[in-house]
Length: 220
Ligand SMILES: O=C(CO)[C@H](O)[C@H](O)COP(=O)(O)O
Image (tube, helix red, strand yellow):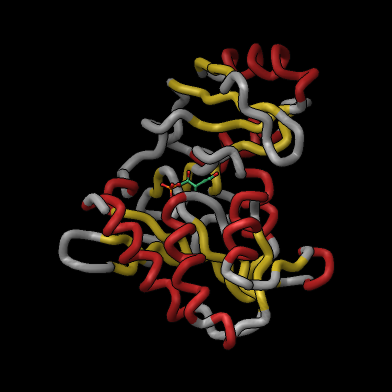
């Protein structure tokens, strides 16, 4: 395990203290994989999970953790997920793993969103990481043209089909000084399913794995 992965694991282990029982919302990615492995140790104390991707479902079920349909459980008390970038307001860029739509749904359906990440993910201003946008296939070119009008440089993540049967555009060069306004603007483009800005519903807590141990950040 390299240093960055050890910091991801550290953050994931620290998040376990928030999983007090019931059904836990579970995100996607390498940091969340550590959380799922940790969750397996306390699986007798939880009812199960709602998963944000086929990959996380497979890992959860591999550990014998029951996976529920979100429609069957209603509002969740806790959602734990990683991020590609987080600012000090705990607004995020997500979707590096292509699971942004289900992640945004489960985050929206959860009372508390605990984000887990290694220290490299904390930034002053979002936007160095190319912004993922999930798009209905027939709208790919139309959405790309609208993203160019917003100042972006979209690149089609060729060969990737999301769990929902859609495509991903990764957008560079966007100005993310005002993440809420940009999230709303991209949401309003016909053919966009989800944009990977999580600013309208930011995280409530950020647990960062660092060289000095886990640090918990609240929105600034
Ligand atoms: O948004 C995501 C997947 O769609 C992930 O949370 C994000 O890409 C972070 O991944 P990792 O924990 O592997 O660094």
